[in-house]
Length: 68
Image (cartoon, rainbow, N blue to C red; front, top):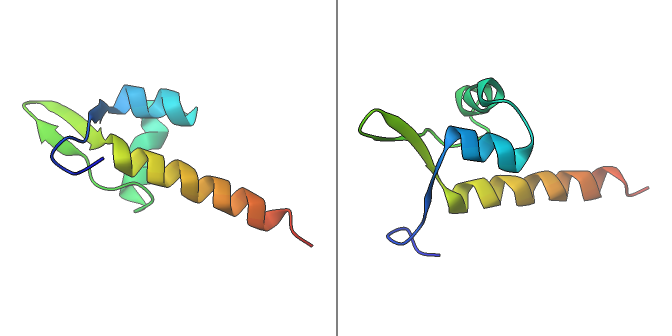
């Protein structure tokens, strides 16, 4: 999806998709593993495409660790 039409997910939605706490999402952002959130009013959001890219990166890491 392009940047204009990309859905913005709340940090709670991101945490649910990845299977971690919202606090862990803040840590992932702070450590540079997830991009900085976008402020929409007072709410923090992350583009869905960035979350999907992060998940794919994790899948790639998992596959690499299982090769001999």
